[in-house]
Amino acid sequence: MSELVTGEAVALELRPARLPSRALAVLLDLAVAVLAYLLVSIVLLFTTASLDEAARAAVSVATFVLVLVGAPIAVETLSHGRSLGKLAFGLRVVRDDGGPIRFRHALVRGVVGVVEILVTFGVVACVASLVSARGRRLGDVFAGTLVVRERVPVARVGFVPPPPPWLAGRFAGLDLSAVPDGLWLAVRQYLARMQQLDPQVGRAMAERLAADLAARTGTPVPPGVPAAAYLAGVLQERQAREVRRVYGNGPAAGTASTAGGGSPVTGSSAFGHTGGSGHHPGGGAAPSVSGERPATGFVPPA
Image 1 (tube, helix red, strand yellow):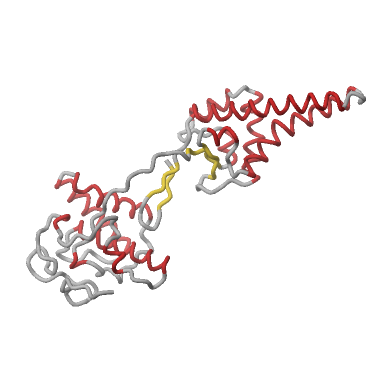
Image 2: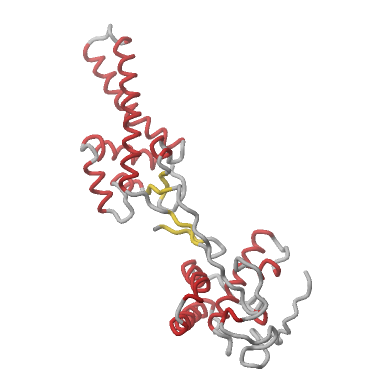
């Protein structure tokens, strides 16, 4: 499974195509190519009747190369990885990083495909696809490409609860540049599923993620702040920065309050607390980050 992580810490999955769908797509492409080759050969048989035997053999070889090798390369290049067979079965050839292929990728795939598909009748391609973890044949390995499925069901994104109101906006001074995408994705997945976990297991997981996040940011977790609430607050700050980066200096406060994917939550019960919105769960005022004064729970209108 190849993944690209967006600014909202959501993974965009590239699902590799498996051997059955790829084999059907190749068979359809070959059937069309062979039919085109036969039609062109019949036309050339009448137009080259006056040529000698050597000239007709040269024309036949050139026709074979152009129709069965050159045409598929041109089609994949112009369609950015969608041949007729792949289009019919919802497949597409992409680079290893998920980008569209270029002429050099299609050329390598086409040249290697002559050996592993046409010469060996697809035996080498089938063996290589079965051995590969992502179903790649030798042409994909040498070209640095991957055949993926485009027609996949859209995964439902889980609801990520926002942080308690007394933590909203209190991590604006953190340096988030060193946090990798994989850690952001792990934090988001934990927050979306923490209500389904055993409390003891979920607490240990939150503490481990909070420690990793604090090590990446260079700032320790504020004393008295639960690990799950800390993760939600830092994730909200990251999403708010992404919104400001995309839309400029627009109102990010309202966006950040609903960045979890649903309506705002006025209490902090999602993180195992029932305290008021303006007080720390332990009963005192909310802890301050970077020397700021305690939050009152009041957010001025935008």
